[in-house]
Image (cartoon, rainbow, N blue to C red; front, side, top):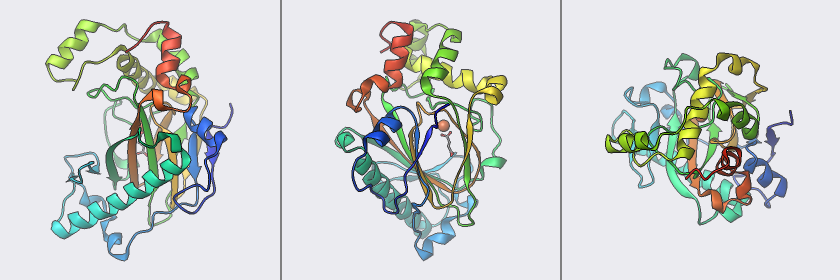
Length: 289
Ligand code: SIN
Ligand code: FE
């Protein structure tokens, strides 16, 4: 299998010039890896790196687009420091993406920025929520009609501990394997889920298929073992960027990460035909949204 990882050795949060191979690579579902791109903590921010700062009722601490901090414990000073740290990462992540993918400027929609202080290995969860299994990202309650999920990840572990991922096979390979096994899409069930507010909007066939891929991959232990994959330790002080709705990934270990999600209409890609929407539409042979 061709490498699914492209290394880019820059030390500032922008690339000197857009690069066609990187653009085509990320749009093909590869992971752009910046091994020497640390997020610099202010001295007073070191104290924020503790798992106890997360409200146990939530999965991650997040800063939404309006600047509201959610999921953090601590006094006002602590919450302010956290919001400023996460906000600074957001600025840097956006600058990096705009320099890499200038055509996306004006088309990206900012999603919340997250801070993940919990150690991955100790997290207990159901198979469906278990990101230690290879998957593509798909959200059960938020249909997206093919809108892309571009993510910037940053390992800020202070003790040099890498965040270890597994990166799997290309999206088309995954889709060809799992689409023949998916449960049929039932439009009236999508209506029921919307009426019951199980979904925030009507679940399209695209969203149904993406969830079926997500669940199909995670529930298949044989696939988890035998799928072509590489184990990838993302170093402390590094950044990586990928379309997480397309790159097959799993997180095995690590602690302390910042993450920025940006949404992009598939039509605004350099090559819309590389999108999961285009690939799945081609495979099933009829419109999905
Ligand atoms: C995921 O999107 O699967 C989580 C990635 C991570 O926590 O490193
Ligand atoms: Fe994921």
